[in-house]
Length: 218
Image (cartoon, rainbow, N blue to C red; front, side):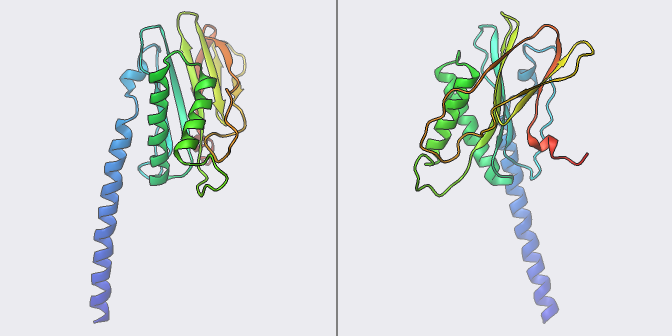
């Protein structure tokens, strides 16, 4: 009887596990559908590459691109939200939704201003703008505004860096974002983050990466 009971329990647990995994896989398809396609990312670049491999099918690391408004500039972003798996994915979907709202209201917004506004709106959405809040969630982010007319890139980051690879033999340039993350509990509004202008000519590649890359063994 004990063997039969354990076997039945194991079967029930297996079925429950499969239902849970199927649900997370479906959530993964939804999260991926919110990310820009490689074809959309490619516009304005000679080449583009993305590594996006969530550890738990879904996760808190996402990438983004603003809508093309025909002014010969656009913005790309990388966001790393707190949490892994489903909690991180929920955070990322909220952050992407708010980021789209910000750029729909002002397509010309500068990266440092956009990040501050994003941090404030996420904080408000999570009710973390009071001393009595229960949650403690936020995100790291980097935004690069590509201005093709003036041949320059404008970068701003919160605990995120932009790496610039020159065309020649000069060393790779690391442009450091600010050391504080965004969206976490607080009552003092975020102010616009520092911005860095980099000429597009003379450099071969620009790259942003979350700590999901740097924390890998080796």
